[in-house]
Image (cartoon, rainbow, N blue to C red):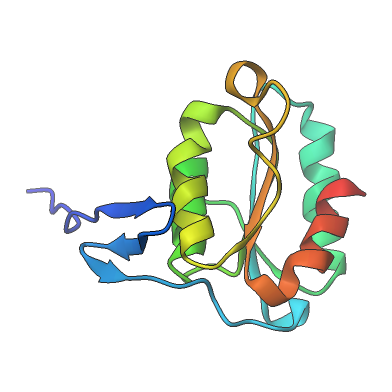
Length: 142
């Protein structure tokens, strides 16, 4: 018989904080990229070569690399401090909009994902430990 993981409900709204099953969550306190675990997401809407280059930049910076397969889950795990960062070259709004509110309320550094025509076309996205923001932005934009 298959066992199911316990249900997890992430929530967040501007000015109301972020929670996991009703308990407050915060971004990881990580200050050094060499101590970070960074999930790199991949989308069928972006060339595979771009994903490879981003993964190489993350590893060259000294961070641990994770590829979990679910952008939405990687984003909220970053908001909960389970991961130090999540980077992806393209993600759609329906996969990330709720996580963006949760991450900002959890104190994460976030890119300006919600800019331009993001609702219709998506954008690159980055969430992470606040102290890593500048370094993560450089990895995403290189």
